[in-house]
Image 1: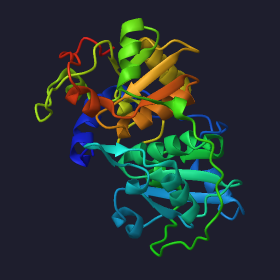
Image 2: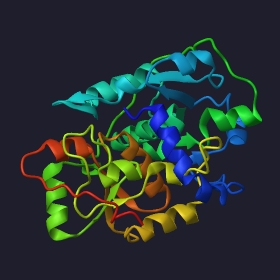
Image 3: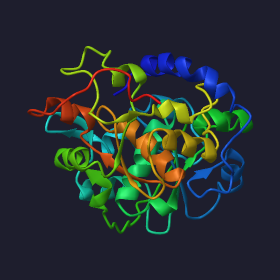
Length: 303
């Protein structure tokens, strides 16, 4: 998992450009995002389920939105064939959400650790299960909520199990063979959601540092105003950023990172901006350890 300290360093790099958007937020009306004011007004809604997504319970136990239930990252992202953060079997994902009261008629609001990355992974998981249209992220997460509403809880929320009928969408996931085909045919954009340093190959802790040939770098943190104010930039700016990286309206775009977490955030913002994202689940951990896969080094794809 990306360490919090690494996130802070990279956020500092993009802070100057983010300041220009500091007074703007995504419109409240979008179905994929809700604002704290909306959530505060709907806390007592019968079908509302709020999920706090975390790597462990520490942040949840320290204080969470009233009624929020804790969803562990390990319930929706697990090791597979030596690669971390892969999707567990559908039956396990279904059971994880059902235990927390997510059912067929639930409206699910997501927030959590890592400035929204883990919430975005939960969104992708629900989208994969066929329930993306009933899920949304809380814009700015707990940080934004706390600015407007000081009320938080430290006692875990009660929940009753629900029944969730799933309709998996395997077409939202791509494997190594699919990425090879895209590189050969050049029929889709390829986006690397990692930090510019990781993309350029400056992280020498990896077996083969660098990026997939042809991929353009759009660091997930660029889509937020700042670390201190982690709300999303205006949709028009998000769309322009991806278009500058070669993503065309209506065309398929494949997004990856190191093991699928950061890419989930780009998946969310790509969909928010009206594109058709697909997640390379194994990401660079899969690509860089496979036999005879080419790797590029350098910052040439940073636009």
